[in-house]
Amino acid sequence: MIDPGVLEIENIERHLLGKFWIGKPKVEGVKAWLVDHGMDGTRITTHVDSVQTALGFHQDADLVISAIDTRRDRDAVNEWCFSFNKPAIYCGIYPKGVGGHVFVVPHPHDACYMCAELVMGGQYEEKLPLSYGIELSPDFSTFVVPALSWAIHSLSADTVGFALAYLQQHDVEPQIYIKIHTPWQDVLYFCDKQTTAAMNGYVELQKTMGLINTVRMIESNGEHALQIRRSTIALRLEQSQVCPFHSRAISLDNI
Ligand SMILES: [Zn+2]
Image (cartoon, rainbow, N blue to C red; front, top):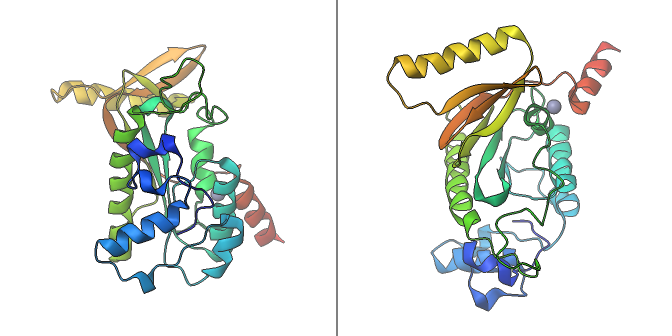
């Protein structure tokens, strides 16, 4: 477990650890919790350090699980996983407790975290911390965000499911798994006619089968947006032509 952070008071309501651990390293607290629940402590290694420093000690890792908020550190995890073609799972929570996603990246050389980011776009980036969750204090002095709790627990459970399936040698497909719990919310944009027609067909199929629609298409400024609500969808993760890792790999191969 790698985390340079200490437990803050605003973490408490959504965290495994209680008040005793405020001001102390999160990874040490979680290790103590696991040992208290029967895990063998000698099998747990903790680093109160950055991923950039600590990942290098674990080149024998079977799987990397990232639940990191900051773009720079997630990028560093991806770069490391790409270098060694290490499988990874990335869990991310959307602001204001509306949901989150899990990127399942079993073969970074085929398609990596950055490929997934390029599909999703950056609409949720650069908004932290002021719109991260629901701020209860008008002067933003405290970031207690109860709405995040369900999303964190629910997406964590999904992440663990993917991790266990992978470690038990099941066939886990590269995917972008999205869970959302809101009124209609944009998740993807299309402009090509073929994809738009296919998505419209899918939306119509839900109606035809008598299902409550959890997916719809809307049009604005010549772009079609796929919206979803209170639902879970999974997109196949494919290599992006503009991913810096993959465009570089392709040109090297060509040489
Ligand atoms: Zn990539």
